[in-house]
Image (cartoon, rainbow over all chains, first blue to last red; front, side, top):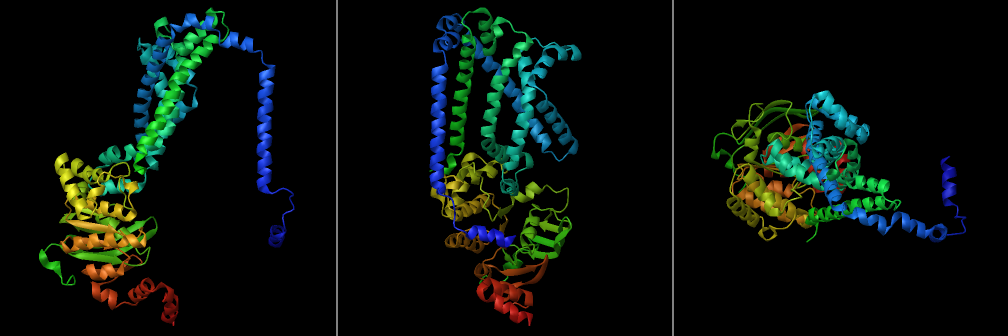
Length: 278
Length: 267
């Protein structure tokens, strides 16, 4: 067997094209496919219909005055849910890293449960089942939304934080401890600030997902003042004649939140990694 | 000369290790160590890799938990489970092979963080002490730099300044120059030599035999979890009594011809 392998390797290559030339040809083919697909799309689409159903200014105008409030509501729901998710997620991450075994079990159970069920179920549960089952009335939609979505995102955030904390080199902890810092002090001043840098990109993802998940809270039953972006989009879809324009406006609203968020994260990442540059 | 026993300045040893054993699972890496370090003394620990020297050092400030035996540091029995080890560690500086500077903080912050958190010094006082120690290691002008902007040798000197800023009574060095490019070793050793001459009690795990001979008061040769030979630095390095010490030193001093020498030894 070994001698066969050797013989093949020693034989001069029989290919007619060099690997580099083949790569160039492959790239050329990819550009050609792209061009053909773009052409087909442009020629086969009825642009006036797309325009009138997605970008109909007449349909967009009446809903525009609702956009600022909806944008604000979506932001408030997101921030509330993230506050709950981050605090609960931090607690769960620390429980998961605890030396006390039952804490680890509880955290694992929670994470597996809330990561495994759809967020929609949790929102519905908070809207209807929880008030009945526990006999508590939560009047504020913001609180309900923050709790429901926050509990779901806590599961994801906990795992992200745990991985981030474990990625901080052991030597950092040893250095802090050998200076006489307590376990907690070390965690607060050395481990968590460094874990923050590591978890920044996955945490940005988490906030963006959370922003979009706020679209589920219409299930709680909203008054007009509590409408979020998706809700006004859906309302426009029902009421107006502009086809899907309402959805386009709602979608643009989300991008107005998520794109700056991505830019902010990139800026923070560059800044916290700034130690490497003079 | 550094050989003269500065040992008897005070009666109680700074470090007193008795019957120390340490196992990682089934593997016993320290098999009954006895070692005393007197105040102002510089003790260098040498030996082949895997002989347990680093583990021994890490047991002194309890980064490793001993399996058996007692260790007294600065008069406190650190192996006693009721002892506040954080308090003892405050007075024991440690320098690591990989520097372990806090990468998210500036050089100055590295030197003030524990001063402020643990010793509760004011910002101004902590910075004054940090800058004095950074001056001592020749890096006061880099106070605002981040660790990643410094060479390995500079980082290690900052690590020494960081430890000194806590006003330690004992310094532990765990192979402080092993991760450095050869041309950067000298600066770190010079700082350590100054420290020794200023009277600091030091326990140094090292592969720098010239340093051990010149700066060390005593040298400990360890192999296979035990102290094989211990004595005045000059004597252990230049005329070792034990065969194993001699073989090790030959390999370190002249690695290329060690294989041949080993052949002779086997005969």
